[in-house]
Structures are given as C-alpha cells and as structure tokens.
Length: 171
Ligand SMILES: Cc1cc2nc3c(=O)[nH]c(=O)nc-3n(C[C@H](O)[C@H](O)[C@H](O)COP(=O)(O)O)c2cc1C
Image 1 (spheres, protein in one colour):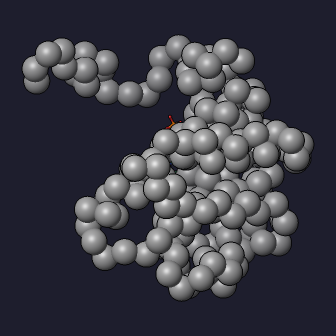
Image 2 (image 1 turned 90 degrees about the horizontal axis):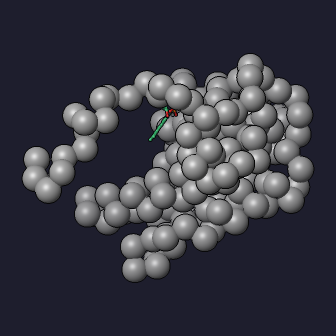
Image 3 (image 1 turned 45 degrees about the vertical axis):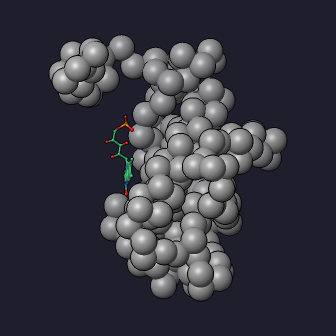
C-alpha cells in the first residue's frame, strides 16, 4: 500500500483470521515502533511481543475490552517506566501513542489489522509478561489479518466533521 492508503485503510480490527504473521513482517511492525520519535529521544518504552496462543489468551484478561487479544496473531505489550509525576506520565503516554500509531500504520501497509487495548489488571500483566517492578504496561496492541474484510481505504470514516476539528490560524 501507499502510505496514504495505509493511513486511510487502518481501522480498529478486533476479529482476526487464523493466518499467522510472517516473522519478517512482525519484525517490520516492531521496527516501526522502535523507529518512532520520542521526547528528547528518551525512548522510554520496551515492547514485549507475544505470539504464544495460551499466553495471548491469558493476556486478553487484563481488561474487559481486550478479548480480541486472545485471537490475535501477535500482540505487542507497550512497557514504560512507572512514574507518579503527571507531566512525565503525559509525556510517556504521548510517546507510546506515537509508537502505537507507527506500528498500526506499518501493519496496515502489510494488510494487517490492529486493535488497541488498555490494561486494567497490572498484576496479571506482570505475571504474564515478567517485566520488572519499575515498569508498567499501559497498553497492548494486537495484530492479525482481519477476519471480516481486507483493509482498504475508508472513504467516510466515523469522525467528527473535519471542519469542526480543524481550526485555521485561530480557534
Ligand atoms: C488509548 C486507546 C485505547 C483503546 N483501547 C481499546 C480497547 O481496550 N479495546 C478495543 O477494542 N479498542 C480500543 N481502542 C480502539 C478505539 O476504540 C478505536 O481506535 C476508535 O473507536 C476509532 O476506531 P478506528 O480505530 O477503527 O478508527 C483504543 C484506542 C485508543 C487510542
């Protein structure tokens, strides 16, 4: 796909086919995250990629809206330093969002769908992923080929009207 088509074709995919993701394609998705920009280039992230079916099933229990993780071909857990500082937390979350989107677009470029999930049960996530006590797992992003229909540019996305969102020069 062209970049513009990948941007327009990405959508939240929660139902995945059985088709596995080839290792080199999964590595490309991960590399997109690794290449992402971050505040001061601090790269306050680690990615744990999970493909084992039983582990994916367990991981899907960390949040009530994460069931799609169970049937994904791969899920990437985004890990970040644990901090109480609201400014640092906001900055980390901004950066994690950028890494997430880079991976989602790289996946869409390959025809692979993605679906975010928040993480409510941090203790369960830690038991499954094994990260150290100074790290937390704020989000997961699941990947897999869509079970319903292939990705293709969405002509009319479900979004607030463009002109309501975009302000030119001043609000
Ligand atoms: C921070 C964040 C957390 C999300 N968490 C979940 C989630 O837990 N489960 C889920 O099914 N979708 C989750 N989503 C996906 C959004 O619901 C979805 O991206 C949004 O409805 C727009 O749809 P689209 O991605 O198809 O354009 C999350 C998205 C973001 C940005």
